[in-house]
Image (tube, rainbow, N blue to C red):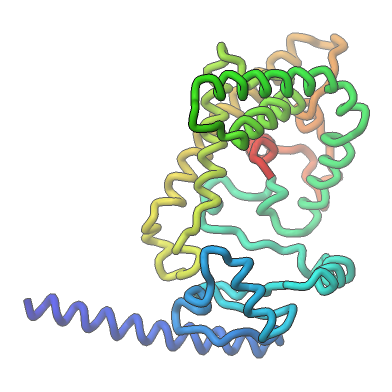
Length: 310
C-alpha cells in the first residue's frame, strides 16, 4: 500500500514539473514567434476547457475579447484562430507561403510516410510537383469531359442505392455515406479505370472499407496530439489502427499498380485511353527538385489520398 501511495505521489510531482516546463516553453515560443494575444490557458491542457463541443461558438465568444486573430493552446499545440473574413483574406492572399506548412497528426504518422500526400506533405518542391500533376493531369478538362458518361453512371447508381435504402429503412438514410461511395467510385474510374464498388470486386470493396476507416480514425480527436508525452502510449489506439488500415489499403493499391505495369508490357504499343495511374507510372522529373521517377511507395500514397474525401 505504501509503495502504491509513493508511486502516485511521484507521478503527480513529475506531472507538475512537466506542466511547469511546458508552460515555460510555451511562453518562450510565444515571445520568440511574436504570437498574437489570446486567452490565458491552464497548465498542461491549455485552453481546451474554455472550448465547448460547438467550438465555432466558443471562438466567436473569445474573439469578442481578444480580437479577430488570437492564439490558443490545445494541450501543447499552439494554434492561431482567425475569426474575421477580412483578416483571413489578407493572410491567405499575402502570406500564403508562410502558412503553407501543416500539422501532421499522430494518426497519419508512421512507416508509410507523407511524401506523396498533398494533405500532409510540407510545402516545397515535391508538394508543388504533386499539385502541378493534379491540376494539369487529374483535373484537366479533356480528361474530365471523357469521364462524363462514367460520372452519369455513378450518380444514377447512387440515386438507385439511396432509393433502395429508403425503402428498407424507415428511420432515414445516411445520404453522406452514399455521396462518399459515389465519389470513391468516380475517383477509382478516373485514376485506375476500375469500378471499385463493383459487387464482384472483392478487392475494391476491401479498398473502400480500409480507406473509409483511415478517414474515420484520422478525424477523431486524439489525446496524443494535444499531450506529446502520451504519444508513445497511443492511449486510444488511433495511430495503431490507422496504420493497420493504411497498410492494407497499400497492399491492395500495390496489386492494382502491378497489374497495370504487367498489362502495359503485354499491350506493347496498343492505343488505350490513359488514366491518372498511367500518368504517374510514366512520370519523368528533373532528378533535382523532382524525383526522376515516382516510386511505387509514392504512387501508393497518391492513390490512397485521392480516394479519401476532402
